[in-house]
Length: 324
Ligand code: SAH
Image (tube, rainbow, N blue to C red):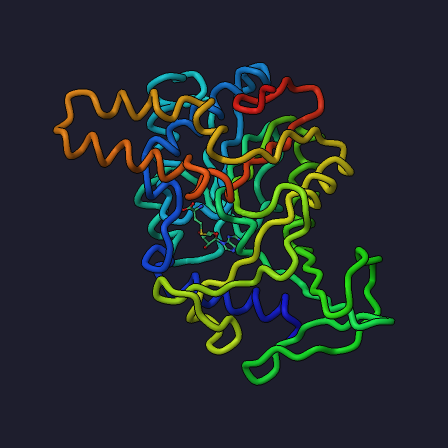
């Protein structure tokens, strides 16, 4: 199978059969303040959009539904008009995770892809979603290129004439193209331009350069061979934020970022929120709340590798957290 088909099939099996949260921890599972400040981000965005009612509040790849449950709880408290106007939609392919999400988000509607989410103004959140989408890998073998396929549990290279020009690369260098992520971004941006709204993408990847070879597998919490046991490990690749931004701009949307997650969360008031949660709590719990917040923002932990990118209707103001 070509690498992208292999990755799509392996991940579909992985997410349908595993509890991925035994293998890795994501930001909303670390601190409830993460989903809460993103709920505040969405509420500010909704006001900037002119308080459309109804409005679609959607999440791509909601995992356990924690982020959206935390966001909705905060929205219900601080922006009841937004809560009343919002129709909740989840884009999720895994039946197992849909069932978990339904326990947290009983009023949501589920979709296999963005295509069936009804038209209209949209606020879309996606945390660690794009890194799960399949990639293609090309290897420079002067004077041409090869592409990576997976045969009998091992990667092989096959000569290829790329369908689009690839960036210059040294002999033997791998160029990764996240076609699925780019197609998704184009679809999101086109929707936002046509119907209004904004999307927030949070994932890990370099801010400026292309990722190179970033395919990785995590099995049982440890790095694993990505090719050996399809469906047993979570396969991810770094997100090429420059390519994503270019695709969104080409569709007519405005793009903000990518900026590192740390300063973004601090600007949104993560620690003010944690301070609130800590009030009156026993000392051990206060320490745990603060440590969780630090894990999300410190540069040598999740604060720098993770980036945040907003895609907006071109007439909207700068979204919260992206001010210069
Ligand atoms: N956003 C969550 C979960 C991240 S894991 C969190 O931050 O905790 C990736 C999520 O994307 C899982 O819910 C997985 O089932 C979902 N997913 C992976 N590939 C998908 C696809 N092609 N379409 C829709 N959902 C997908």
